[in-house]
Length: 209
Image 1 (spheres, rainbow, N blue to C red):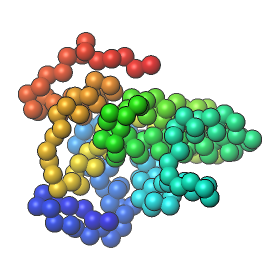
Image 2 (cartoon, rainbow, N blue to C red):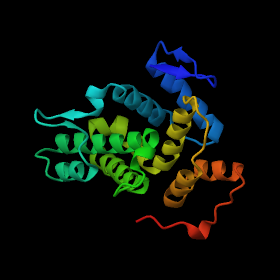
Image 3 (tube, helix red, strand yellow):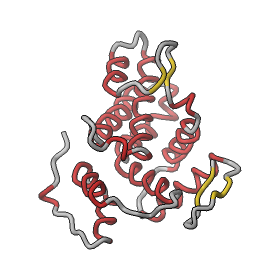
Image 4 (tube, one colour):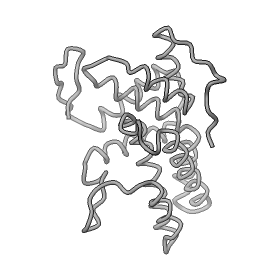
């Protein structure tokens, strides 16, 4: 993988995990937000893992790709064991965050958009936090999952910053940016709009369910 400068030149990245860690730290500082260090570490590891397509996409022997979030949720509800339920909830939350952060444009004009992914991701991490609390695993991860649930929107903005900083282009899709702000209340989207002289009206936002 390589990073791109403003001139479009590819800069080799020797260590992908270090690249993501530095990029996320810079994005958090740039946006002036607070994210627990353990949650940040979790997101860095998730991004490093999902950079491999064989880890991001699922292969069940018959189909290869991404299972819809609703089907993942159904799998979690029908899981034969607590461990399998938790693994499915974790993957649901991870996929929702990764797609929302890096591939939000792919959701435009689809039946479900970023607000749906946010709701599903927040819910998955929140349920997972409660599920593992009080267990041996929960001692290490319950608070991390809770932070991921409560800071899901913040983390989406952080990942958008990371994604955009690696792009050669700097053109802003104002309509899509406004749509994201309208559906999620993203502080980053609002700031980008204001930088372009567009003042979002809070009354126009649709409430999330």
